[in-house]
Length: 138
Image (cartoon, rainbow, N blue to C red; front, top):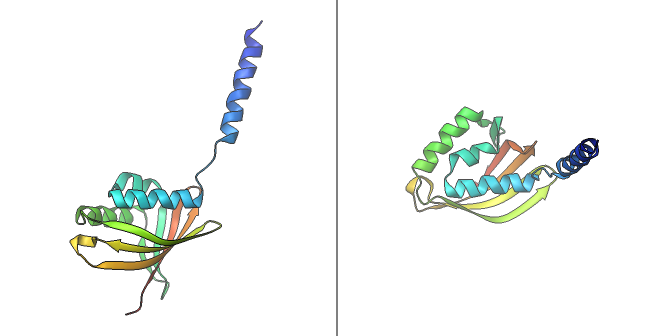
């Protein structure tokens, strides 16, 4: 019976491939989020968001947005109203499951002004589950 050794060989080979499959790193997850943001692609953007994602203000810790539905509604509207939306990373620091980006954003809601933010993304299981937003004091 030559089929049994062949099946064992195939199973062993497939197991090896699956065990070596790498998950996306936190940096890769955040990079995918950034690229889909710049492409205004809500489907890909939401694919890296946790269903219970929360957005927080750094200054007071208040939750400004909570959950997949609120996130999708907010960013769908932003993408629709911002045809020239683009974020450029000025600096990026990766610290374990946290990715800290200093971003320069232009074209929000059709406006010409440039906004600088620092965003702290927390990633678990290839999903962004928390974003803390730091804005410059005026």
